[in-house]
Length: 343
Image 1: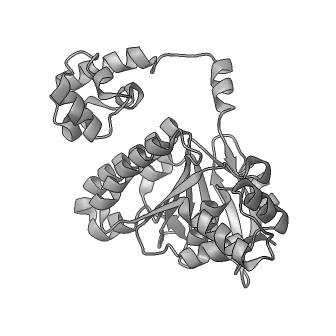
Image 2: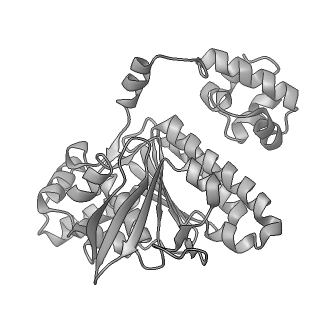
């Protein structure tokens, strides 16, 4: 939206419009879903003025009113489902990872959390007929886990039929058995993965805001952003805020970060995939003592919670812990050199 349209809102002059755009409030919709406190802090606008601006944007964008269940159902038909390329897991998740939702994958070290984010960075680019969303990926790397070599492995691990389809879609001459064509295809996949390394929690929060800008820039492009991966969500927060005295501040910042990510999902029909660390609960006498970090803040913000558990060899148990419309259950997959594969 051009900046001069923002000046149609009450109390927004050229200088205020510039501030709003600089801080990511570049459309009526992005303003309408903000809170007065958030706009006041980030765009240096008085809270009362921010409230007036937000109310006017809500009216102009027709955001915030009630609607019928039939309308909600119609809108939900726009939601995409990103396949894991593993039938058992896709069935467990009702078709795959949903756009406009936060999916949390947690588990202990070596359970395969980063493997999931890498695989989804590949799968999201596939055609819808092959279970993808025909879009790009934003990858926020907080633990130095992103490896382009792993993307190489996973692209090569796709079925030959899917590889042939992707070469045709991307106008690459050759076949999957042609080394030059495969190298060109892998480079094309890597070109649609936008990676940024977060050095601390404040930088991580800033990258979420930058991710929203990047998603906006690509919205009308051939490769819109269809997934944002954060691996891992809690590592910096856990390291920087130690002890009960800093717990409240940590949870407040984590809550804001999650809402920033959710806004990207809502505005751009994007899936949000976050990995999470775990801790052992010493008070647990029965069952698995493993608990996800982040407490109720993360538990309530995540639409889908998936627990990855090690099994024999390269087997992993994928357990759906929480979902608004699906029954809890488990599926089995393997983490192999070619990526995530069925049992």
